[in-house]
Amino acid sequence: MRIPIIAGNWKMFKDRDEALKFIYVVTDRLPLKDKVESVICAPSVFLRSLVKRQGEQLRIGAQNMHFADQGAYTGEISADMLKSINVEYVIIGHSERRAMFNETDESVNKKLHQAFKNDLNPILCVGESLEVRESGKTEELVGRQVELALEGLEKTKVSKLIIAYEPIWAIGTGKTATSEQAEEMCKFIRNKVRNLYDEKTADKMRIQYGGSVKLSNIDELMNMPNIDGALIGGASLNPEDFIKLVEAALK
Ligand code: PGA
Image (cartoon, rainbow, N blue to C red; front, side, top):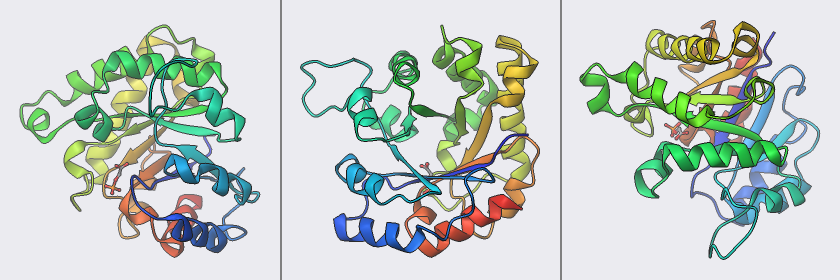
């Protein structure tokens, strides 16, 4: 049995007051974490404040990190830094970072190795553009993203990995993939991991769907056999909605 996981991705939204207000509203109201994992991936400047107030059921994640241990990388953050302030999750390879900040399959792979080396739980994002979908090459592209991201990772690590399938055309657009389209790709990703590793690894690994997930579509998505949770941008900014989205994953 895979424990569902709902992760909010705040992107570059909220100031300190808003971030703290959110945490005060949700703490103590989230379901038990052995029933559903709740994670907020916040801007790095707020991570320490949020970790201090996360309570029993919420976990805190970063939205990115560098793959090196340390070094002259102005503006970057290392896995060790995140670990030292008790951050537990990190999003790797979000499509916005791939499109706007030169994130490549190679750097994604290095970051995954680095996250596991530092005992962080990575959420690996993959997904196709509208152009790729319309040209019928979705599986080819997503399959390649998964294969390159996982290169050199042992199966014990991969079984703990969280992959978020996020079609770029559904992110922040209000246009969600249908639950059938989402399930089809999450199933494809699980099969890919089964082929690269084995049955047990693929069965343990959790796969989220992301892209305009909201209260009106989460139930349908969570009913799909290969969808173990969601990575949620816009709808995760409101604390009351976030609580309801996590509760929806319980059912
Ligand atoms: P969205 O973003 O829910 O606002 O579409 C999802 C994401 O980018 O992770």
